[in-house]
Structures are given as structure tokens and as C-alpha cells.
Image 1 (cartoon, rainbow, N blue to C red):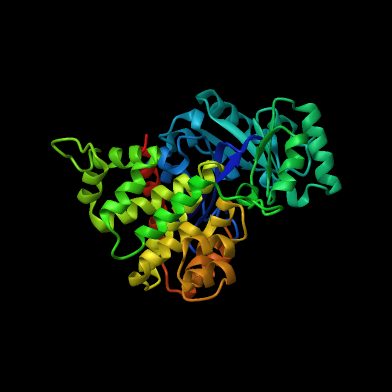
Image 2 (image 1 turned 30 degrees about the vertical axis):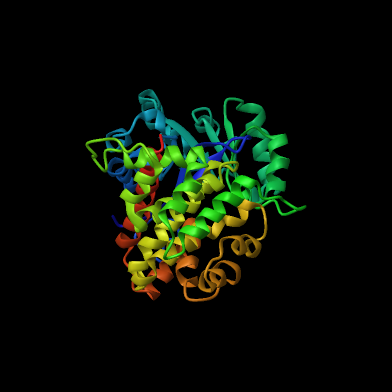
Length: 412
């Protein structure tokens, strides 16, 4: 599909994911910063088309999704474009596009009758948009302009006059700011705050984390012993349950169930047990963190592995996987990234990339960061510079999300 897209998590005040919203762009058009002009998006919603092709579970873990729409899409029959449950779709209107709110009300009312909800962003005149706000369930507030007088006036007007509306506060990029807003506003919050390491004051690494890191380091030895790995796994109930579920899943279609860890380890073999331990340990290391931290870590890992073929680095695929996996290790272990990497004994190439943003993997890592941030102009330039196709990147990212969902499903 000729689409660049990334689902962004929205958290409640307890840092649990409430919903996602799509940042997207059609194709690789350097001229159109939004990818949603009349000639680029027209009346059809590519995100809705993508949702019809890829399961909601893989993309949003079953959570509702905000789908950005243009005023032209709003005038079309959006209900015929979506095959998803209406209560899972929230259409997100760009308020800066709306010149005459009254002309869209009939379409909004029709879609609401089907069960769809609406959000709106970029409002400059709350009074003018009153009739539309009455029909909206969410309003997005960009913290980058949070203290501008016009924004303050808009926010006060909406908060007092439209009490049914939930605020969505975006670009909250550190935990201190989140804590401040958390105490003042109810609603949803977006930004990097959830993956910011708590490095103020010494953070102790728990005994469980130490054991998991030791297991990870042992399995990366090319000549590790199965018995030694089995003994370590058996001491951790979560690892034991996860491994037995994996080998007894429909994927292996065994006639008799595997009942011991030794059997499971031998059956998987060195390559597969190394891969499983790497992903399982990453999940357990972040067990006391917001679930989205682990999700980000694993999706980055798989995305980087998929991109290895696009960047001509096929032989480095496993190293790129580890690079992505450990890219949020600072947030997981609550210590600076260089100290965190010391604990897992990464290669110098991975260290250079994650600490200094240099080295042989830095181009791939920079691409991943720009993609996640939806810096589409930068992504477009990198696509051109590296002779990459939009469809290849779309497939690589979607494959990473599907792979993560499969991992989670196996552990349920």
C-alpha cells in the first residue's frame, strides 16, 4: 500500500493505553506535508482501507483508534469504507480546514447514528465551531502551543461550555510535565513521557532483572549449554509457563504435549531458543513499566530486522534486531543508556548507535526514529537517499506489528 502510517498511543492518568491515533501520509510526496489534500486523499481514507486489511488487534491491541479525515472525506459515506466495529473508530477532524461548520453537521449526525465518535484538533475559534463541538467527544490540545493566549482562551471556553468533551493533550515529552498535567486535567495524554528513564537518584536493578539479564547474556554465547539454560528458565515461573505455551501451541502441532523445560529447549534448538529467550526476557524486564515500553522495544526490534533487507544489511539482521530491542533499555532499567547497555554486553556497533548515534547501524536507527515521530518530510528524503519504496516500508512496519501481536497471543 502506498501509505506511511504509525499508530501513536494515548494514555490515561494511570499511564495505561486508552486508545491510539494514526499519524499517516500517502506515498512519498515531498510537497504535501499532510498527505491529505483534495488531490492526495480525495474522498477515500487509506487508514480505513488499511484497517480492513490488517486486524485491529495487531494494530491497536483492540483499543479504539482515532482516524484522521479531511473535510472531503467527511462529506463522503465513510461508513461504507470501514469494516470495523463503529465503537472502535473515532474520526479526527482537522478544525483548521473547516470554514463553514454547518455544512458538515448532517454527515456527522449520520455517522454518529451508526455509532462512530468524533474528535477535533487545531481549533482557533471555539465559538464559531460550537455546533461541531456539540457533536464531538474529544478535543486535541497541542502542548507546544499550550500557553499561547488564543489557545488558553479556546481551552477555557471548551472546558466550561462543552463538559461532555474529553481533552487529549499531545506532545507531553517528559514525566515531570505529565505529572503536572495529570494533576490538573482529566483526559488522555500523548508523548514520550512514558519511556523517559527515572535517572534522578540511584535506581536499583531488582534481583529478577539481574537473573533475566544473566540469562540473556548466557544465551548469546554461541556455544551455550542446553542444561544450563534449562536450569535458569525453571527458576522463573513466568518463563516456564511462556516456553511451555509456545512449544505446545498449534504452531508446532505436536501429537503429545511437552511437559518439561529440558524437552522444550532441546526441541526448539539453539537458534529458536535464543530468539525466544531474547524476546521473552525483553518483555519480563519491562514488566513493571507501562506495557507500551515493551511493545515499542519489540516492534522496533522486528522493524529494524525487516529493514535490514531494505538497507542492504541482511547479514546484520540479528544485530539490528538487538539494536531495536535495547533502544529503550534506559527506560526499562531506569538508568542512562550507556550504563544499561553495559549490563547486557552489547557489541560496540550497537553501543555506538544507541549512545552516540554513530556507527554502521545509525542510518537504520535514525530512519526508525523519524518514522515513529511521523517526521514525514525527513522520512521521504531518507527514502529517496536510500532508494527505498514506500510500499516496502509500509510492509516492514505492518509485519513488525503483526509479529508482536502473535507473540502476545501465544502468551495469553
